[in-house]
Amino acid sequence: MDSVDLEVLKSGVRWLDAGHRALLVTVVKTWGSSPRPEGAMLVVRDDGLVVGSVSGGCIEDDLIERVRREGVTQPAPEAVKYGITAEEAHRFGLPCGGTIQLVLEPLGALSRLRALLDTVERGELVARTLDMATGAATLGPANATDGVHFDGARLLTIHGPRYRMLVIGAGQLSRYLCQIAAGLDYQVTVCDPREEYTDTWDVPGTTLVHTMPDDTVLDLKLDERCAVIALTHDPKLDDLALMEALKTPAFYVGALGSRRNNAARRERLKEFDLSEAELARLHGPVGIYIGSRTPPEIAVSILAEVTAAKNGVSLPTILQVEGAKAAREEAAGAGSTCDV
Picture 1 (cartoon, helix red, strand yellow):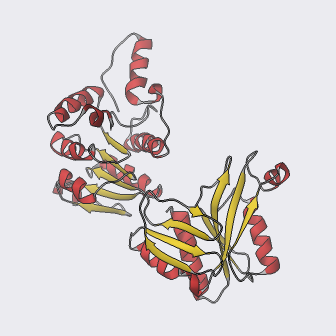
Picture 2 (cartoon, one colour):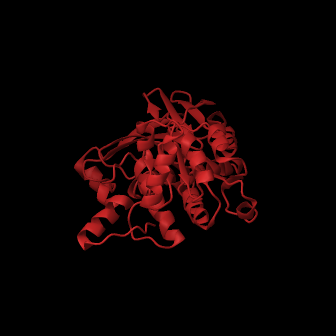
Picture 3 (tube, one colour):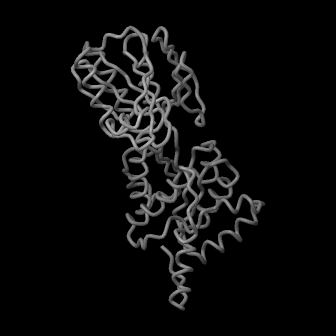
């Protein structure tokens, strides 16, 4: 779950502990364009204080006004829709044709919000099932690929770390990349067995391990919600991670380096019995072409490509480093082998 929704849970627990009534609002379905995805949440306190977001702001205003006017008095959760008509879409700031369905849940002892928050803060993935008739919630195991499900009688939502990122190397570029990745709500693990790099690692929100990269990939049991980025420039480390990561369902596997180094890397990886299909999954040189030169710029470039892959966006060749540089060289009539 993203950090905004985590703050929603924390605020809800804090307000209940202080004796307030509160309404938890969850996006359960969208039609057309929508500012926030299914599963997004906000919580409204009985005095109108709000944390979180389910739209661009106008729906929040309507919910706040409702709570201030009526309080949180409903006995059980209810489902409501916004933006059904063009007039409502305009009023509530939804894109043309957009419709959003919300579940409004009065929080209480049956909500099990404290247990949910404790589980999430332990880094565990958990499914919460809400009974619409009683307001009682149950918690259970979840898979990273599970999503929101609402059938009118029950609401199933998934909470916890949805995406993980393994970064090979604890150098300067990794620092910038991991800071941004943590802000994008990845659960970040940094692997580097070299003490000269790891002794000074102090990036908040990341886990540092000193194991060998291939062992780390196997230990993490990577799934479809995982990304692996090799940044050491050392084939002894990067190749170990890549040869195992390319065999996993990870949605993104990439390595830093020039086009020449990337071609050499692919030849080396063939010696590890990787298939052509597995090798074709390797992103390299990593990133999109934005003319990046500094470590922060390179980090932005890499994470832009990771984000596109995460969201199922296929980037045109001209945006990829290799394609963009080749096109530039062709246009200039001169070659260059320097890639960032």
